[in-house]
Image (tube, rainbow over all chains, first blue to last red; front, side):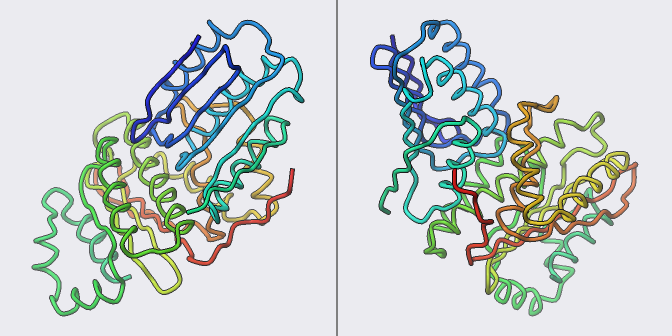
Length: 125
Length: 214
């Protein structure tokens, strides 16, 4: 089962593939009030992600994320991560552009919040 | 910043019929010319700041920045900070119980300076909101780098949202990322409102706080 939302100028691309245990969120999350957008995503996860997964791969690749989105995004990630049978079964790739320390910092904060080490993947300009 | 003072003064005195034409008519052209050149105005806006307009302003800044700023991290940081500033104004507008102090006649001025960019915003707020906002900004300004970092992490992880769905992280983010004080002032206007002027400087040099490795 899949859940896909295309990227817009203010909302990220969502691509969840339950069969592959593969979850992608990428692009911009800059809505002034992103609550409804993430409620929709979380609602889908709640309905469709009821089983626990032996392994989970999450790719996160953001250009911009406003502070209003941070907590929403963390909640969504928690919902996925909590379905993994163990934290060691979670592979989380955090992509960021070379020299974009702010985006890397954000990844480090998220990693700490979720209690999962991230793979930091630097992208060239 | 003479131009900013001039614009805010006009706003307070003549909020209903303020126009940039009026500003030009009231200001010595030569002086304005030098202001605009010396301060390198990147973006200026006066009017109602709505959610839809924020995106248009951000697109405009992004296009302009792509031409003048080579440093991608600086570009992205300025973009993020301006977005936080504007969304703060929009949130406030949604919060306004009466129309008297809504975000109408909001002001925005982004200038390029030698060592970075200056973002100035102005918007009307209800006098009864001043004390809480002042307390919040003063608190953030009083925290040391380390305290700010701790406070930011606590706020990020408390899993609480305000009634408006906001996370309360905007001003924390701005001061933390720039390493600068949040400069502000309130000036009384009519109808139980004040003009809230806010200024944050975004240095070109990277000043992000040291992050503890996870």
